[in-house]
Image 1 (cartoon, rainbow, N blue to C red):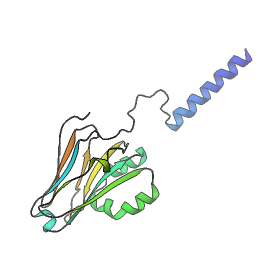
Image 2 (image 1 turned 45 degrees about the vertical axis):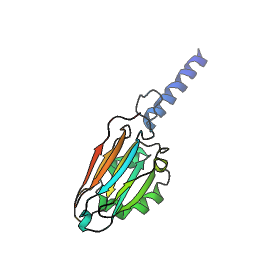
Image 3 (image 1 turned 90 degrees about the vertical axis):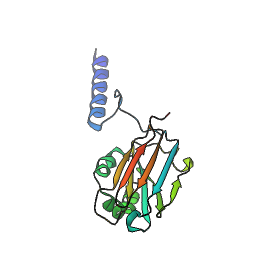
Image 4 (image 1 turned 120 degrees about the vertical axis):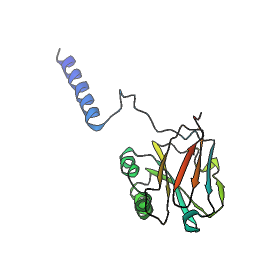
Length: 162
């Protein structure tokens, strides 16, 4: 009887530790996934960013603790804090950095992102004008077209992915 009580107490302690630490032993929460994108294309208008080059980052967020902060972060803050965040969370973020000029189209090779397992992805555009300039990219879409206008980033999804 003592052994059964001791075993039960151990299981209860283990479950308590899991519950307190956010353990997903019995959870059906989503897991990080690879993007199902067949394509990722950026298209800049002729007057993008007052006719100057524009930095664009596609950020794969692999740490749930980092995700909440980045979902609310405007692009200017992202670009100012990017190096520090990458140093602080070296395994928590993968950044695909690009620069686009007016009237340019960039088709990002799948090899740059296809193996990135993440909770979510965000696109940030470093416009000279104030604004959020941030869009979430759902990982299970078939692909994305990022349209970079004079002062705003528009994202068009290509539909469900694989």
